[in-house]
Each structure stands twice: as C-alpha cells, then as structure tokens.
Amino acid sequence: MSSCLFCQIVAEEIPAYRIAETERAIAFMDIFPATPGHALVIPRRHSADALEAVAEDLAACMTLAASVGRAAVSGLGADGVTFQSLARPAAGQTVFHVHIHVIPRQDGDQFVFPWPALSGDLTEIEAHAERLRGAFSND
Ligand SMILES: [Zn+2]
Image (cartoon, rainbow, N blue to C red; front, side, top):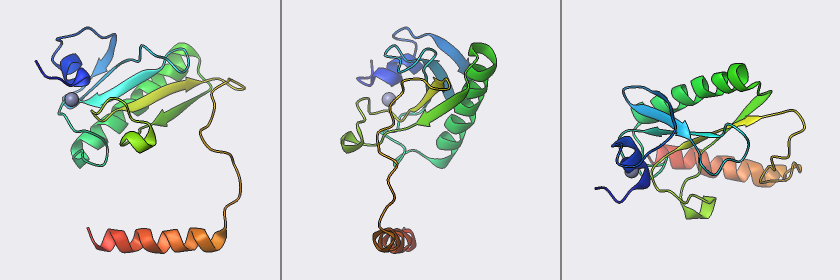
C-alpha cells in the first residue's frame, strides 16, 4: 500500500465520496470543507505538487475541476467557485499529491482570502516580472 493518502484513494484502498472520474483524474469530496460542497481534483498518477506534475495531468485536473465547478453552480446553487492549488509547505500544502481545491462560493460568504487587496509598488512588480521572464529562458 502506498504511503500517499491520495494514491490510496485512487487505488480505492481507502474510501472517498467520489463525484466524477476521467482517464487521468478523479474528483471527490474534501472531508475538511472550507464551504459546503468543497471538492478536490487529483491526477491518478502521483506527483508531489503542480510544480512537478506533467502537463497532461495538470490539464486533465483543471478540466475536471471546471466541470466540478459547473456542477457546484448548477447542482448546489453556488454563485461562484474558488479554484486553489498549493505547492510545497511554504504555500500551506499538507498532502503531497497534487490537488486542486474546488470551493463553491456564495455572494457574501465568509470565505477569507489569504491576502489583502493592496496596491503594489510598481518598480518592485516590474523587477519581479523581469526576474520571472529570465527564469523562463533558463527552463
Ligand atoms: Zn500520491
């Protein structure tokens, strides 16, 4: 048995409230819901996080996450959906198998954004853009 919780769910070694499945990805309920109907989408193939997953698995997960989001709107009456994926402990990741949270939202709900909406320093923003462009060319 794998030591990865989500690989165990993929292998059906532990139970989950599955919603939908595709060749590459599965969707199931998060048992620590941020809002009612909170679901997770994961690739069947293990990758620690979105920084390590292959493009085909990332595409399959986002496609399935969008389908789950549409189901939250039509089936649960959500007004919107927050899609979220955390990579590495510094970002708050706690299960190290890449996953996308699909969090149904209601107008005026109590979901808390993790950052304040404050204007940034444009000189600093431009410097970070330059560093990121440089990192792409080093791929
Ligand atoms: Zn895994």
